[in-house]
Image (cartoon, rainbow, N blue to C red; front, side):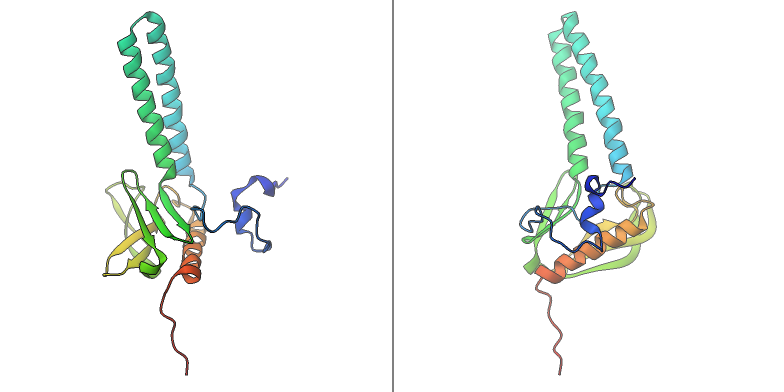
Length: 187
């Protein structure tokens, strides 16, 4: 029994062209769902954090305040790292495109975007140093700099080629709507 009101793909249905009430283009949004690899790793690390928190409670009950506070701190770091890993990815809004990494965030206004295109190139597999041949959505900025927004071998799109294509098309559509790409003159 399909429950479309519970799925994140509801906004991507081709048959449903009605604007949703929460469809505010001024808010930063991720144009795709987080992938199963990212969600699975987050679930495992939160499970680990729950065991660490349980250990901290046991240590605190035993009377070692210093050990308990250090263990609570470790659990806090694991939880914060997990939440940051879940925020990683590409976000779009009317203001521009934002690439959120684990330690840094790069925001490029649409006025400074020269191109958004999908290219074949070596990409990192699950963010590890190992590279494989794959597709990447590359953003060209003024000054000739390039920023890789999405890859088909990331934690969000590994084994989800259709989701990568849909996300790349969505970012390109945002660029077509809000970008200042030069328009070809017709005569």
